Length: 436
Image 1 (tube, rainbow, N blue to C red):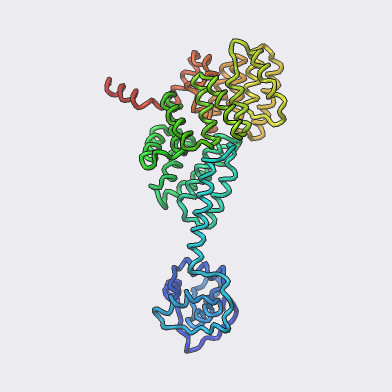
Image 2 (tube, one colour; image 1 turned 45 degrees about the vertical axis):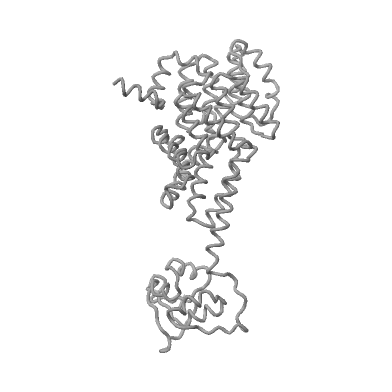
């Protein structure tokens, strides 16, 4: 039974009885031949139904080639089997140029991946959805592009830190994309970078992440995403001076990058330099950066722990916004609690808890901040644990976060931090090893 209708065999036909034989005749791989069957009607027959063995006749293959007008394919076939005459007067223009289609797709895929990668360097916001779409399109065109696969993984991981993407939604996709990229080209700089980010943000495997970042930067010392990732790892080590140097270098390499600017602002806040954080945020807005997260970081930098009511006055412009970042709500709730305005704090607490019940994973750290303001340390620690489990950006700053200073005197919180086994700076580790 022919897959394309009944065909009457003849003694003049040469019969090819396997995918390999057909592929050899056409000068292509078996997978390509199978794709031509499904996409373009290559004349393949089956014996005994859809699951039976396949076969093809050479003269039907040659006729199919003529009718498609593929002189390139015909020439490949004729090298081993003799020339196949083509009457150009009756051959319609080719619909697709098969010999060049894969290379054209790969070229277009590379262009899309390059465009997506450049968005890190030039983006005015911290929304990674556009780059994710470009990487997806690149992969659709060329599933063997390690650069596109690794780029997708990195975009999801970085976007997960900076946006409202749920950990459970992006982590599995990021892992799978990276695994495929590693199988194709494990040494490519984008693959090494994505591997390092995955180990840091999803696995919290600090040593493996450090090794991967250092390997990536050895290959490409000025690669912005790796510079930023290594800086974040320094933040987790509480090595803020080292983090500052790398973030400054990353900003020099990518001065138009909103994510890089945002990480610099957060670092300045963690280092206790609120005025620097506010200056960086003001400059970022002047050059067109815009992100709700920047408002939240500005609110953090404005907090005066000795004057919570005055802080609320300074935060008043942010309370008029209709779409507020959860972190901004957490800061407002913390300040209300610290100012003794418990009812207002409880109202924000209720809103964030409801958002959590609806699946929002970016509210754990803001909830912890409100409980810190309410002096409810057990609940504060509980939500900090959840933020860590959610892969929150803010968990990288737990060892140095000024908002958590009061918790560091709490044995429960100290035990929790010790259990997390945050990374130790390499120089300190070397001193400890030498002492031992």
